[in-house]
Structures are given as structure tokens and as C-alpha cells.
Length: 186
Image (cartoon, rainbow, N blue to C red; front, side, top):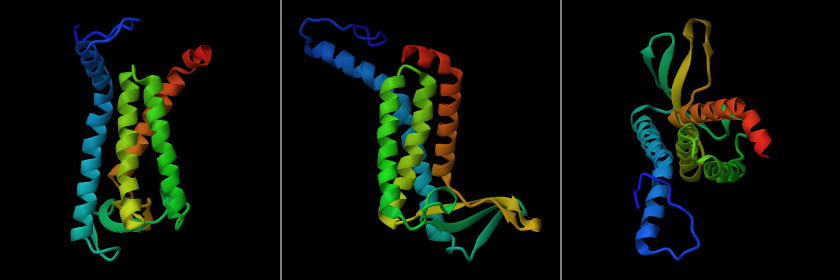
């Protein structure tokens, strides 16, 4: 059986070779999800480790583009913008539910390369912040944008947050562009 074609479903007993081909087909479908999530997770984890090791918490700011973009070591015990601060267990449970939804969406939309990539971004970001919450009790944030002369700063964030935003944006675009197709199929 050619591994570039989807295995046919038949009523006959599957041999080892057939099972292997089917396994390879499923791996090809999950590959974009995993191949994107793992590097995002590694980049997020490495960047947070470097920040924790080299930038003093809150007291030190490293200007990258003076007046606009800084590196700053902050901690966030909540979700986005500090919402639900101090509710660690609840946020861990929400993340577990989100991971279940990511895999459910993967099963439903796995034929779409766009959705595989969107879910890869979501998975990498969700797991990155999940690890922080589990081991540190809070998330390490370090990217700070703003207008320093006006003392206007966007809340600090991290690579995982960026990844979740990209994935969520891609998911919204896909669902919006295909809303008629999916409403007719339901």
C-alpha cells in the first residue's frame, strides 16, 4: 500500500503491513500539529528559563527598542491580563479542558492543514503556560510593549501567549470562512 494515499477501510482482517500503513497515514496527519507544538514549547520554555536566570524579577528592565519594547521579568498568577489571579487550580482545570478541545477539534478537522497548524499553535502555547502553572504556580511573562514617554504599557506576555493568539486567530478565520459548510453538515 502506498503511504501517500489514505488507507481504504474494508471488512477484511488487517495484516501487519496494513496496520503499519494506517499508522503511517495517521502520523502524517498529526505531524504538523506535533511538529509545530514541540518547537513552540521548546522556544517558550527556553526563553522563560533564560529570563528567570538572567533578569531580576520586576526590578530590571532591558530595553530592546528604547521607549517601545522591553524585556522584563514578570509573574502572572492569573490568565490573560491577570484575570482570575490566584485561582491556580481552576486555571489548571481550564487548561486541561482546553487541551481536550484541541484534540477534539483535531479529530474533527484533521484533514485541513490550516486547522492542523492552528491547533499546533494552540497546543504549544497551552502546554507552555500549563507547565509554568504546574511547577511555578504562575506564568513567567517577559515581553513588554508600550509607549514609555506616556507610561502606557501593554501587559507583559510570553511566547506561549503569542502562540495561543496566533492559533486562536487562525481557528476563528477558519470557522468564519467555512461557517456555511459546517452549518450545512450539522
